[in-house]
Amino acid sequence: MNQPYFEAITDALHNAGICTPTLVLDKERLDRNIDHLIDVLNKGFDYRLITKSLPSVPLLQYVMRRTGTQRLMCTHLPFLKQLVSHVPSADILMGKPFPIRAVRHFYDWHQQQNACACFAPEMQLQWLIDSPERLQDYETFASERNLNLRISLELDVGLHRGGFRRSSDLVEAVNFIGRSRHLTLTSLMGYEAHIPKMPGYLGGPAKAFADAKGRYLNFIRAIEDELGSEALLQLTLNTGSSTTYSLYAESSHASEISAGAALIKPLSLDITDDEERQPSAFIAAPVLRKVSKPEVPLSPALSALCRAIGILPRNAAYIYGGNWIAQPCYPEGAQRVRLHGRSSNQELYGLTAGTRLGEDDFLFFRPRHTAAVFQQFGQIAVYDNGRITDWWPVYRDQEGQSTPLESSRRLTIV
Image (cartoon, rainbow, N blue to C red; front, side, top):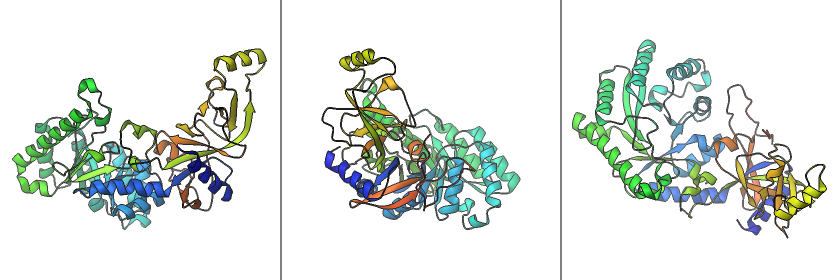
């Protein structure tokens, strides 16, 4: 992270009159990350955008326009409601299996929403099924309501978090759906985010990728043997994640790739060696005061000893806010002073000697994740061509929580 880059963002924040902790999105870097994704998609894949990683309707709509997709993946019931309300043209695949009570809740809610009349769940919504028992629950519910539910079957391709693990069980599920008057099989999904995390003593990522591909192909062959090759032509074969999408060089076993956080590249994605993508979102926290020779209360002698042995820094700064799931990235060498503990109000960070950072400047952080961090901020400040050009609201996490107004710059520090 170079100094001129963050000094330019600092100038833009100052010129925009920003004086509170702010989530900044670099639109130019976002575009470059999108271009990298498109290069992979051009090898023969459709794209499904994972919405939990980009929890802002304007941000989602921007990425959808740039990638030319209407396909979304959703993992949270309150977010599903917002997508249905604000992106009614989307084709939505649920990214995890939901309890039948959640399904019932959604349809009860949807029937009461006049504004959502243009979203047709029977045409645009796919529910993820991971077991025969859950499949039976969904069929019973659909029969009671006289509904048609689109079904995606989750494949266990090595992560072992859930899904169908044996081809025989998958075939039974496929035949069960075929006999139902209320269920339609639309896709298979094989999530394989474990691949880049596999240690060398277990064969590393290359072996994990080959294993996941082999498992997926076995499931496909089992369906083909049972129903014929024509049945596969009707299915979407989904796979991928933000840490694995760039591994796909050909569409040998998948037709659709999912990714989301890769466009932001939070710290959690640094497990890959991909240097073509750049971090595009940062927390900018104003410096409230700089401190020379910081101390602990009531003990100047102990404070001096702590500075001498490095437990306390020789220079530090109190920032506005703190305690985010993030790590400082500028100025270089900034570290949280652990002796002072965590604070969501004024957190203390040690600075290296010669750091050129004044009061009212900003300490910058990289989020470790996207969804959990983005939702702490009411607005995203869009940084483009040296200026803050727009404010994109973040959608709410819980039902009943107010949605940030586009005209506000409200921040919730938690």
